[in-house]
Image (cartoon, rainbow, N blue to C red; front, side, top):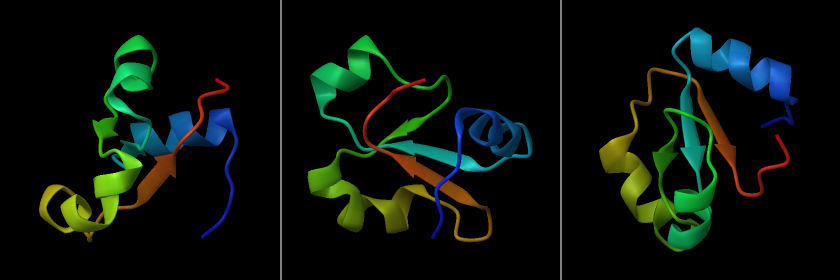
Length: 66
């Protein structure tokens, strides 16, 4: 695991990386990266195995400073 900046997130998204937003429902509705999958933090460990492709890179974020 490593930290990436905004530009790298956009480049990863363009190369088909899966973007995962772990914010709560209200925060996700008000602001998120376009195309991000919504897996709230309290459910991410359970839901990730069903909603993410392990063959593709995954970028996870919780607070949006973009």
